Length: 212
Image (cartoon, rainbow, N blue to C red; front, side):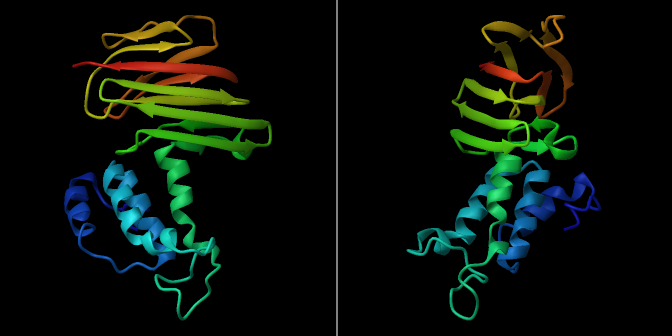
């Protein structure tokens, strides 16, 4: 909760992550915030590993509902508060978050962890947003159909991105933007995690080559 609330300084992240590899005291409801904290610390692989471990019984169960507690006995077996991982997968692994009220503008900053493919369809007031992500050792692909303006991020994952193409046009090469002046796409900048562009509503097919 200290990470989610912004109280924990980044210097404490390695120690917090170490604790969360061995300590399991949260309820299904509070576990959502453990997973969110890991994503905010840029540890999606650990978040996915913990998610699969903690919710394994519910996933394997013949029941199609989620339980109130970790065991089905002693509580409701149809309990919405155990659905936190669904939010985490959408908001952090797929990376879809609202930037303005009513999803009038969104950000897509994926943290795929060790996932190879992600497909997500989100119903927005303006229409459906369709997102497909795919990655390999040397390539990342994002296929996006969006009815609203979006801030998209090409994940760096600790490596150098040598070339980014959007709709078959180079927009980034050798750490420099090549985005045009059409107003349809704009280079926003980059940090240690993502190379960011702003795009208007429409269909955007992005591919990134990872430097070897």
